Image (cartoon, rainbow, N blue to C red; front, side, top):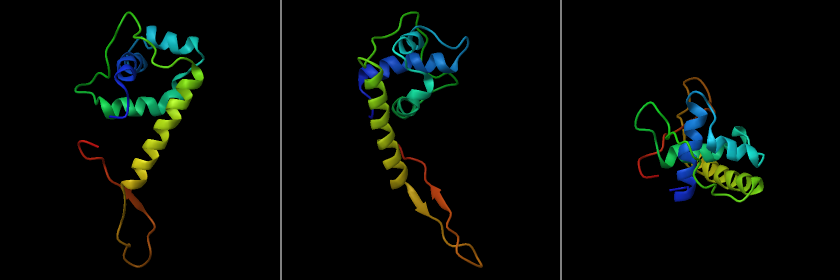
Length: 119
C-alpha cells in the first residue's frame, strides 16, 4: 500500500469526480479551495489506482459530501505528491528489462514490465 486509509477515502471521491460527469464535486471543491488543481495530484491519483484498482468501468465512488481532507494545506498535498512520484519513479526503474539487441546492430530500446500482483 502506498496511500493511507484517509488518503484512499478522500481520493475515492476525488478521482471519481475527475472521471465521471458532471466532473467536479465536493472533493474537487475542497482541493480547489486550498489552491490544488487536478494536475497537481497526478502521482496521488496514480497511487490511488495502484492501491485500489477499479473493478468495473467506474473509478471510485460518488459522494454528496467530501471525505475529510487528509492533508492540512496545498503545500502538504504537493509534498505528498512528490513523495509518491519518487516511489513511482523507483518502481519504474526497478521494472525495466533490457531487450536483446536487434539483428544487424545495437538497439538501446528498453521494455518496461508490468507490475505483478502484490507490488
